[in-house]
Amino acid sequence: AGLHKNAFTTKRFDTVDAFLKNLGSISDNPVDLFIIDFHLDKPNINGLDLCRRIKSKGAYPVIMLTGEDDVETTVACLYAGAEQYVTKPYELDELVARIHVVLKGWARAAVSYLESSGDAEKLTLTLQGRSRVLSCGDKETKLTQREVSLAESLLGSMGIEMEREHIYFAIFGRAMEPFSRAVDILVARLRKKLKLVTDDYVIIPTRNSGYMLVKK
Image 1 (cartoon, one colour):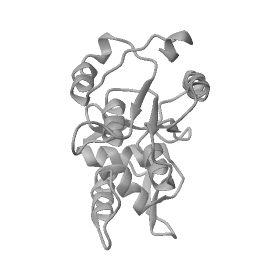
Image 2 (tube, rainbow, N blue to C red):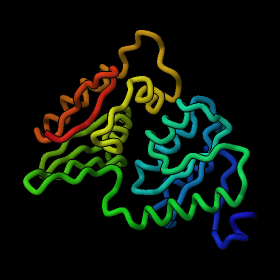
Image 3 (cartoon, helix red, strand yellow):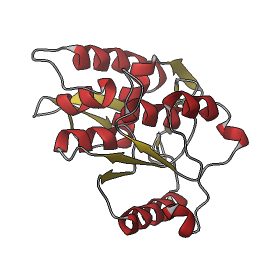
Image 4 (cartoon, helix red, strand yellow):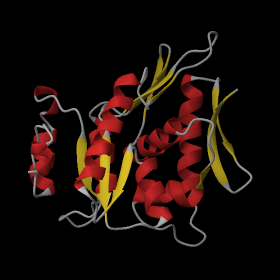
């Protein structure tokens, strides 16, 4: 009701199943922005999973709502692709302001966050989340869903270090277990597939035991 009073047209879904059913026909019903909750009604799925599913459908901005205020959850939401993170309880004026900020920023964006523009002599590296295809020029390769999640995070943070713990949380939605090599194995797989489409971009280890996608 509050958003309606602020001249927004909205559609609410009270269950994950209802939302996912409608997400399949998103191309027939244009959407400017998604607002989703981190904690959902369905076991084994949270806002991170929902955010990635939305992004796999195309370039749609997302605002995440959550009662969690720890840094780990905030970082995971942003790495999963959310443009804004709002902690509950919140004031309606704050949410409306963040909606306007996201929509204005999205309108100004020249390229999708899933795309990294190269220099003049380099081709553009592009990830198509829906079809799970990573491409550069006329070369492309298919990714698994978890490889897509990793690629989304690295492309969205081009040139910025991502700690292994944050990568793990963004992909799996839970804290990384001690001595886990899941992130390293996933990075190794993505490196091989990245090599199939381009030599201009590489995933490098960082000083703080993390990873970063950079241009050569």
